[in-house]
Length: 265
Image (cartoon, rainbow, N blue to C red; front, side, top):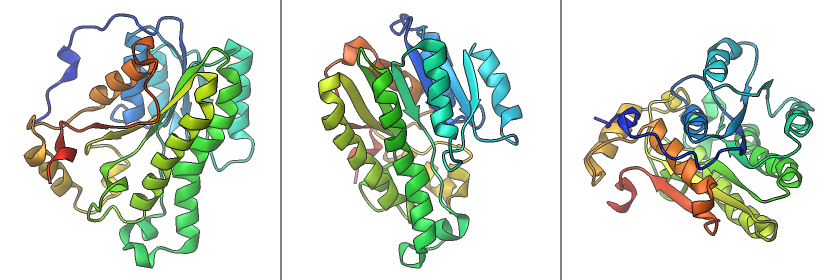
């Protein structure tokens, strides 16, 4: 069973005055919510997005709880919405310090089958939403990070090795991790750092779409040297540290937040 990170002491306000855009909150179990909550605890100002009108009632109370300065709709497949979010950030703050991309999607029929059975359309849609949208965000965010900044995307162990039933999302997340490395190289001269974070299995709405997910959770507990699952705040605090000046010369990495499970065969 996972240790509750809510019992941890409140960290120093290492992100006081920093401006963070967090994309991907669906509910209070979302990894993106853990990141936003951690940022809030250490002093950052927040801009949050919600997918659509159906998602808004679930996310809006969380935005109020965290005192988000901006709360905006964002469907990365809808023409103009991504640009509108960054226009609002520019108009409200004049700049940006932190970007978190925590969205992923594959059509259910393509996710449920093996990679050989994935349609071209399904593969392209998964790649666009789960990977290329991060590149598009980075292009819009970089001009707003005049004094440098940090960008984060969420990956999973299935990007690096075969995880049963992860299917098409494995190659897609591998492309996302490679994109983070290339963006870190391109944006490094602007003092913008880019990381992929790879949490262990978490009980999120997105994960519920994977076949035999309970087996993944049990396997993670048995393999992790610490003998526990991670939770969304473990991811959030890691993200907050990496966004802080204490990690100013770290970039281009894929960081595993999984209790060490990734080191065990």
